[in-house]
Amino acid sequence: MRHTRLLIVGFVWLGCLAVQAQIKPQTGFWRGVFTMAGGHTAPFNLELTGKTAYLLNGTERFELKNVTQRGDSLIIPVDVYNTVLAAKVEDAKTLSGVFKHLESPTTGVPFRMEHGKRYRFVENQAAPVVSMHGKWDILIDEKIKLIGVFEQHGSKLTGTFLSTGGDMRYYEGSVQNDEFALSAFDGSNPQLFIGKISGNELSGSFVNSRQVRSLKGTRNAQAALPDAYSLTKMREGIPFTFTFPDGFTGKLVSLSDPKYKNKVVIVTTMGSWCHNCMDEAAFLAPWYKANKDRGVEIIGLAFEVKNDPVFAKARLETVKKRYQIGYDMLFAGIADEKHASAVLPALSEMSVYPTTIYVRRNGEVAKVHTGYSGPATGQYYEAFIKEFNAEMDQLLNEPISDRAPGKAN
Image (cartoon, rainbow, N blue to C red; front, top):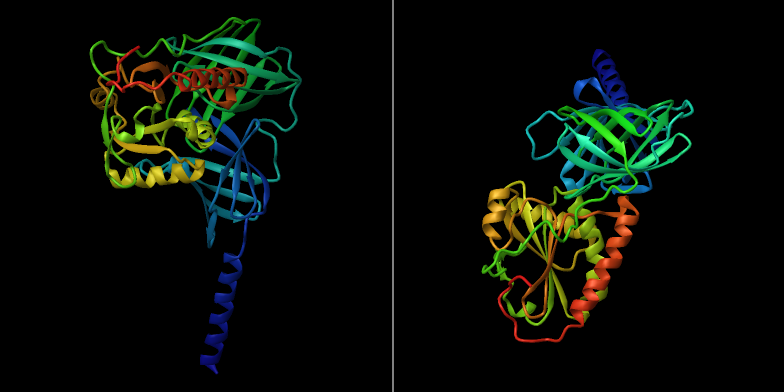
């Protein structure tokens, strides 16, 4: 009898564990909050639909596949950036955990999420008494220059920050009274901008998971970046050429290979860690598919966080799958300015990803474009697409002649 009672107790205990393991987070909208440097909090929004989730920033819905649950652990991977939201399911409407870069030894960024909340910063917002709408010259720590481009409708604020290297993608937030708050999380790193507006000036802080930096801004409708085609030059007398292993097979590939002869070639430096590079890939992949029969090739030169071909192959396979890339991607080594400049000596410098080189049919370099302003920049992105297509039409219409070593125009 005692043995039977023990069996019954054991089955009840196992049954309780099974019930506990079956608690699943509710589908729908969630509001999360990261704990950042200096005790600041950065909110983010996510939609969970079972095995798929979407990070929500402004107009962007960034898809995250292969959401898995094991017991009370929920894993939301961000495949393209090799990061993960690892959460404990406290109950069907509460998650807590850390955001972590999988190749990093750090402990990660703590977060907490609640179901059913769609607001960003404050549910019941106070009416704004100032406007942040328009363009601003921004300074971080008195030295890093950015351009802020914002749209404000009532209390709702969206926009982005542009630099010579590219944009900081989609930000969303609000203006209340004379204070503004903007946050962004696309799966790479959470970011937070907060401060106050006084007339045509703003001041505040730029916060990430590691540090708090000073922020100043001046409204300027004429704010503009330097010409992206003027920042990286070709060195005189040094041909633009390279040989790197294919990121998937390891076979050596050179710009001088027969595959590229008499073709226009777009060469872009990239890395799976670089969100501007991923925005460029999202544009170039379908463009290449639609135009490859016109006599054009694209080569992505991948500089990764590890100088490891096996690691690089895994990262590039993920990027290729997400963006359906049909053009060549080569592994160029570690993402280090000295290394990149050494293996691409024809360029005056190699510090910005992406840097995109346009090569004529005869092997001459027509232009070099530094950085990339993606779809979050609105009119800047639209202007780039128009400019890009005009440039490519011109290069593709040039006559075929004997291919010379890649040199500056």
